[in-house]
Amino acid sequence: MKSKILLLGIDGINLYTALEVSPVLAKVKAEGFFTTMTIDPPTWSGPSWSTILTGTTIDSHAVIDNSFTGHKLLHNSDLLSRAYYQDQSTTTFAAAGWPPLVDPSGLGPIIHERREQAKALRHRVIVRDGETYGYTVADAEIAAAALYAITHHAPDISFVYFCGADEAAHACGALGDEYKGAIARIDTYVDNLLTAVQARASADEPWLVVITTDHGHIDEGGHGGDSPQERASFVMAQGFGRSNPAWATDVQAHDLTPLLLAERA
View 1: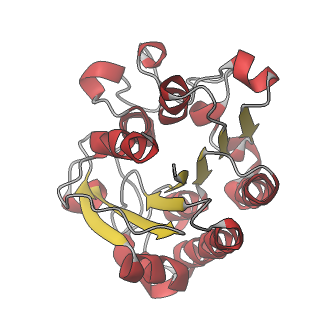
View 2: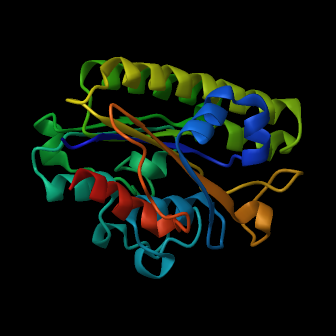
């Protein structure tokens, strides 16, 4: 039985801080597969998420910063698209408040539009604009949309993205209550999504939930450089209605998409 896959992208979290205020993330880390992961610089969201979601390196997708100038994303299909091309019965879902990830009218998108599958209700995309309206609002709306999608549609493979922690770190630094509070809010969203997955999961409908981040933050808030703190990432994965994945612990960012596609093979 093919597993349904939910990939949760949480932008800009330092794991050691997150584990202080995130009981759900701590539980997934303890009970599931876990490994640290080192992001190739420059540690901007554009290149990092492009690498994670396409399974290719910067040399291939050509996203070098958050302007996406000169990108080659149209020649590097994303995780959801590749899963569909692998099996055209696959249903996919993406929800994000950072437009370059999913908005076809924006700078990317990294997640391809796939208009024909969208019209056929095999591909659903939820776009919000956290850059304009703030990620406290955008993340809450993304969480609600993702919860509805999992509960009512159970997509075969989904990508859901939260950016409130990254926004807080840029504004207030990565050590204070604002950053910790933003991570705690996201942990609540993750808890709700995991509860919905657990309510559906069985041997006949196995699920794999995977959680990762695109970069860390220096203490005063900020990223883009090549310090160990900025390059620090991780992969957590927990099976529901199935076992945890038996992946090697030397996962690199461009390995994640191929690993998830292998779970659908």
